[in-house]
Image: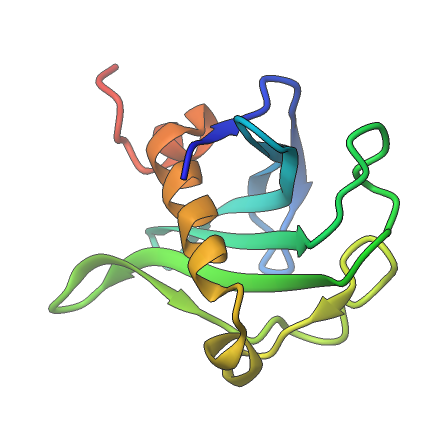
Length: 147
């Protein structure tokens, strides 16, 4: 599948619940043929001295190419954590987001258990791989690009 990060994205600084500042990337992923494919948020945080990213990916089966934030079809949000796991190195795992994050833009916020059973799970992992491999803010956060 040929996915591309949309070059028009936003990076903002937020204060985490723990009191630390972190960066949030908000962007779009496009399919080279069909256009709008996903909306994502990547929160790059430091907890306990470790670099982590909490990534939410919004998928829809009918994105409107002229207005991708308008809900047209079935819309769901998957969530994961990318970070260091003792004995495994850096890894990514589905997570259940804290609280109720569901709204019209996000559609149904899937729990970890729901996400594991969802037919779009492979699409989600394709988007997460793209973000970790290509997003400059996420790559910088994890020291993946030479300085």
